[in-house]
Image (cartoon, rainbow, N blue to C red; front, side):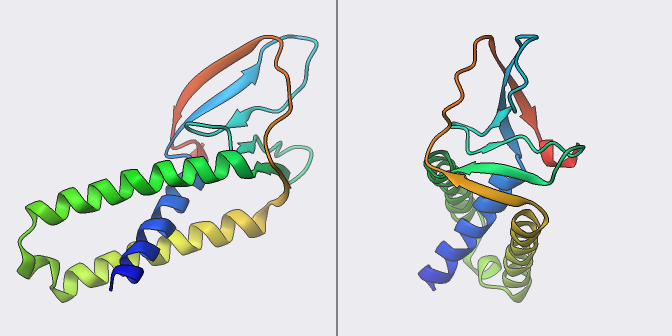
Length: 144
């Protein structure tokens, strides 16, 4: 039971991460540089995707692991907090189980789309030195 709950938390956390629910976009604002934006909270885990030129980007393993841990702690904390407030009879109901597995199924769909629609290249950490860095906090960037 606990392994299934851990799997649900990790899948939902990964979906929130890849949907950029709350993220920081780091850009280089110098006019002579054309570097891609770095996206992720708390660490950058990917580059921006230039929809005009190609459907490829770079995933950074270091930022991806840190961001996945961050979102798993957030989702796990929310689940733990809700479990303390919701009565046990409601938590064990069929409706509750259907809802939690439906959320997990939608998270899997987001992950499948994220990894199949875009060609990703893997690197350990970003190595782009920004000369004129600027950061912007964004919400639900995947829906833009």
